[in-house]
Image 1 (spheres, rainbow, N blue to C red):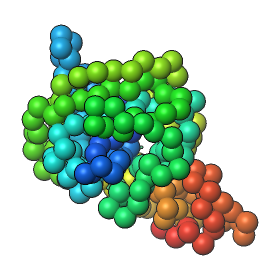
Image 2 (tube, rainbow, N blue to C red):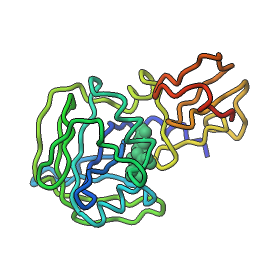
Image 3 (cartoon, rainbow, N blue to C red):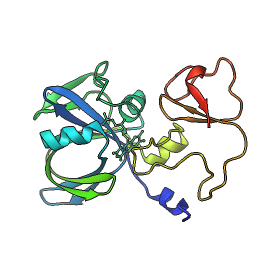
Image 4 (cartoon, rainbow, N blue to C red):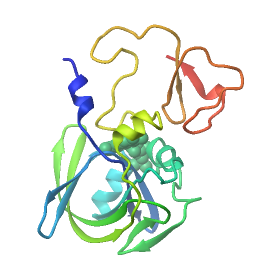
Length: 213
Ligand SMILES: Cc1cc2nc3c(=O)[nH]c(=O)nc-3n(C[C@H](O)[C@H](O)[C@H](O)COP(=O)(O)O)c2cc1C
């Protein structure tokens, strides 16, 4: 199947934050949409392998920080390519607690606080439907998924619903021509030779963190 059309579905980017028995935990998602307008319900798609999934199952509350173009882009590397299983992702970021969930401080397009209503099982992912219990306004320009790809040159990791295997050219089973390297820290793909002093443009990882694919 040619999946090119799926790449044209538009999204934003969000940090989902939740509460692991007092420890703030969370991850990046691009899949969030408003389901109803009155007494609003939203939905997010969460990979069952994400630690954030397990914590939301237990805690049943989460926050959504709507990423802005002005937001600190290191949030994407920290929250989107590492796991709270073995890292305290909120360390080094300014945050506060509200209604038992962490709220990141800094520039965003707003924050939404949610209480889980139900989980819909979809093979690898649960779609989590949740009641909006509060919101915090902010005036950053919402970061679209297209901006993330085209301006920040970011990729989707394995657990994102939009993940595309990078070994083949889009929509084909043919390997892409030329040398390609993946940053093992954040998933950024570099095409062409790697200079000796190369650093990942997304997460600043050094050359030895790149593996040829
Ligand atoms: C741009 C981007 C979009 C992502 N979108 C989703 C998503 O919609 N759903 C999801 O489950 N994971 C998504 N992920 C993957 C998780 O953020 C990632 O697997 C994270 O390391 C999980 O951390 P955790 O184990 O602490 O929960 C996305 C990651 C990135 C970088």
